[in-house]
Image (tube, rainbow, N blue to C red):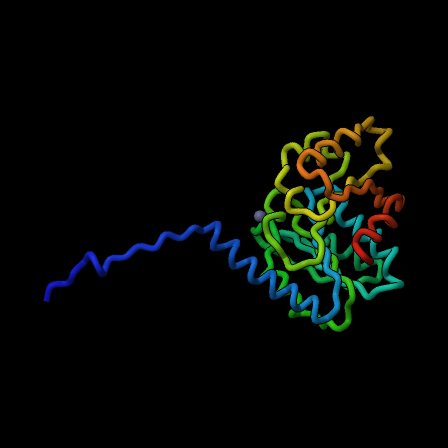
Length: 222
Ligand code: MG
Ligand code: ZN
């Protein structure tokens, strides 16, 4: 019997990017439901290596740990260095070693959340993998996405990574205690942020001295 190959041979074009992001968005919605069910405020903290994400979380925990039961999820290719630092403050931590992945995705976060008793926590800080590029594109199901830039990275971080700002809810300019030493023009950096997003909240913070942390906490609704 002859087969009509024209009918049997079919093609489907998969837009890998779209498919990947679509699946992640669904997983992120599940995470958001889980956080909501447990009345948890979840914050995703993104930024390059060395911007002070861990120190920021340490400072936030110092200010908040009498008020809330906090869990920190730390995303890293390897090592538990960051998680250990935060744990030394008496905060529960869970390391997500991503192996080769340069960002956390929603599924990784869900797998991690299955390892803990969420009824024990009210706030979850997620330190994303140190990288200013792709973490912004992956929703994790959090309440707020925070981008940390610091004045030690030089003046062009925002101009080189405008998309990150577009995906963020809050921008932090960290390490302002070094402004004078480095003769850094913070106003110019903030102007670059404003160029991408005219209304996004920007906070100038020193995680080291605690300057600006209270205002940030207010903005996080904590
Ligand atoms: Mg870190
Ligand atoms: Zn990545």
